[in-house]
Image 1 (spheres, rainbow, N blue to C red):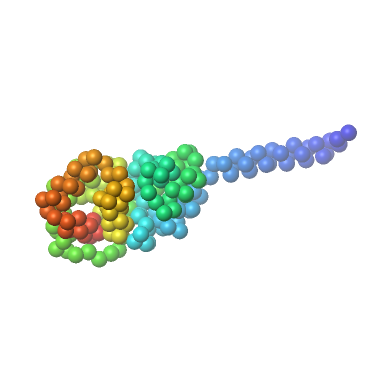
Image 2: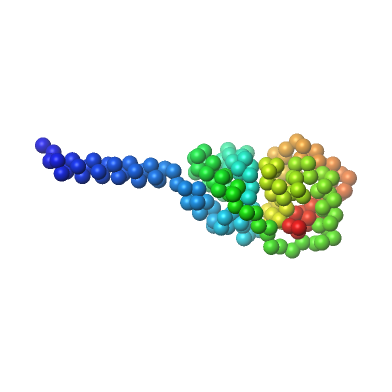
Amino acid sequence: MIKKPFLKMAVLGGALMLALTAQAETPSAEALAYTCVGCHGAGGVSNGPATPSIAGISQDFFTENMQGYASGEIPSTIMGRIAKGYTEEEIGLLAGYFSEQSFVPAMQESNAEAAAAGAKLHDKYCEKCHADGGSSAEDDAGILKGQWKPYVEWTMQDFISGHREMYKKMAKKVNQMMDKKGEESLGQLLEYYASGK
């Protein structure tokens, strides 16, 4: 025969366990974002040239990229494994959190002459999708202006080499630019985005 005090303790313990489990299943956006700090910096502002700043990017862009990493559509060294560890709900929470943070341009050097040429190239070939000189998050194409130059360069190398599938419109514009302006045009674009101005 089970005694009443023991039964009450068991019921209370079970209720506590359920409450703690429910809380553990749905962490806050801030708690989830804290797991990204080691690579992407506090609030998504990266301090390292190999890792992009994700502060201020649109929710759609964040979500699409996380899904791309998880599925293997976007090649990665570590993000594929990380993205697979999040639920759809958690990705949504992270997307909301990072979209509300302020983008901070990377502190890096750039060649002013090449950046000026890159600004013209951007206006002609890239502005339609990467609005406001590549600084808009609203176009769901990512923030390029002020992003770390090595990260943008390596991403472009993945696209150009075919290691990562390039969008048809982007491929058309990149090919047009490089055919007309030569391979140095890509470097000029990178200097423009690196200038962050």
